[in-house]
Length: 403
Image 1 (cartoon, rainbow, N blue to C red):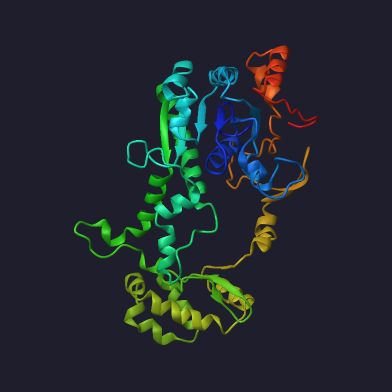
Image 2 (image 1 turned 90 degrees about the vertical axis):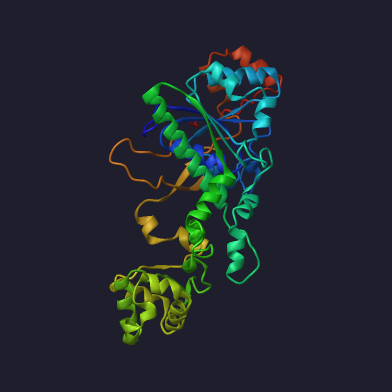
């Protein structure tokens, strides 16, 4: 293992998207991430097209740099094996509700008794000290609770969820940096601890830090909502032959843009003289941009705005994004040979380091691929592992030639 977290062991009891996002980051950074799955596996294994059962694309992109161990934690032997594994770990991450962890006999008090230095990290819907504690939570529900569909409705349509798992992704990132901060604290103090990452609270802060706006002050200095972001014309601009994403932002951008569209008179317009006045009149300003963009092709606007140093990018589709020349030149995409799934497209770790370079350490594992390997590491004999397999506590799905 290489990377800044080399030597750290993470027991990953998460599933779906939120938790796997966090643990994949830790794995890419060099941690030994052991994904503990129930006998039927992470439900996302079965999502989307696949060449083999349980190896769907969403699962494969979220669970690289991990080893898979099957343990039926509802059986005493499975729970005993997990506690033995936790004695060797630095982090336990889970995203089931705390009541479920208690039913499994895996509260922080129990786990910390087995390993006082462990970072016990729960990422779930709502903080345990509020009235929503224990409610089920998924990305859609948290988006709604954090007002994201309401923001969509302010733009003139029906409330809609963002067409990406933005809550799971944002909270997953939060969980990853929270764990790393807790590990840093432990290095300084020697103390493990329990940390909670509630989805609702994380996403409420994410929304309101931008949109609380006038409600920031007591008494309020105006309504909630960042005006520029809630302007219907804030969108990719239609050109003669497609769309372009352009954002004149600071004073010099707008002065140049007014010249480009042959409207030098707008330079002296008090509505657009500085960022404060532009924000107050952003709808009128963006309407001017909308009309101007229709006069040229996307390629023409890309060339003109790049030359003027005004921020501009193409509007990709999912398909064209995969062909983006920048991503391909930087080596972001690679086609690799998965030991069981054949040729697959993989994405690199996006961050760049001068030392302790993160990297994809393993391709996504088959269910139970590393059960025997990990159980052997914590002292189980071949005979004991065979007994666990026969009783359904674990599954041994070793793959020849695979990591």
